[in-house]
Length: 525
Image (tube, rainbow, N blue to C red; front, side, top):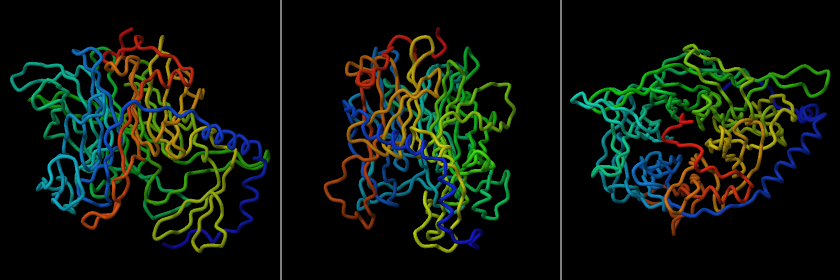
């Protein structure tokens, strides 16, 4: 690629840092708080799953969702996505009660690294729109909702609880009925065979600092490029107005709003309602009182990829979407059916920034991509790109990447927004009514690189009488041997951990409100 900026001069770093000592001290203080954050122990954990680089159907736990059983008081399930390996459904002690294989999957031989489900297995083939024939289902995020009304084949209606999953490989939503008493359950696939792609197009916002030649705007979206369904949150509208799914797009600064509907024959499908677009360019103050403002955008390791969002949660009582943009921060977006089909979300909706937001950066060429650095390389590297910034523009609490979001509901629409800060392995508690108010931070023993988490405020079995918090752990214990298996290199281990809400609340002096919100009826006052 032709260099668009000359090699960096180390003198660039000086003006970027002027006038920022106070904010740097605040950063050091925030980092010290993260290091000293209380460490809370989980009550149960699922068995570690061992991943192997590029191995067929290798597991990688990512995002959990909690389902509360209406007919067995205080019982429930934890549904966890395993990416290429599909889904695991767990009881509330972390035991696997069901394995769901992805609908489009490669063959697995007896010699390949261990995978959930049958092995060996012949597979099913690639996603229908995969021109290469090498793109398979890859589950990414999951959420649950209650009381969805199906239309059965005979025209009768049935209300069921549903789990919805993003299949980022095939760019679809997969919908499952939750029926724990069914012989084929507890999860049963009810996705309509005609369910469409979530993102048949992609909205491209190239970086002026790292140009690729791509033109901005809407383009056709080849499935094999994997600009596909990624993060997910479900929203039950008040009354009988239906159910919505909010879905982020991998490698794009976009969230789609979809309407879920009964497609007949006991199936569920979806249709596009609108698209939320997030501009990845921000105006930050100059480095001194008289200097001009700076147009800042995050560094891109792969210039063709826009800064993506993943973690989502909807405050269903308030009608607000919270969205985590991994290298930017947390957005708060009011929802309304009066919004147009395309919404350009204003920068004022960014309520919490990551620490590195607005900072100067250096993009150093690295084998066809870039290494994004926060200081100039010691020796000039040809093709390095420098971006000006202001060290005082960032937030104080979150380290990139910002990942999971969840809401703990309290009395009179109070409660907490819970955020996972993957960059420093911490979890953060914000006030739900004023999400700019940072209340506390904590860590979980033996847990790091967390992607998703979920929380409920109601009883979840005898072990969780005051609520349940479930997190993904990207630093689970490894196998007895880390040697390659069938030529595939070991690539880390993952699992889920289950914590009692009162353990967190007691440590951080938070409220316990087990009777103030019913997740099965979010609009019941």
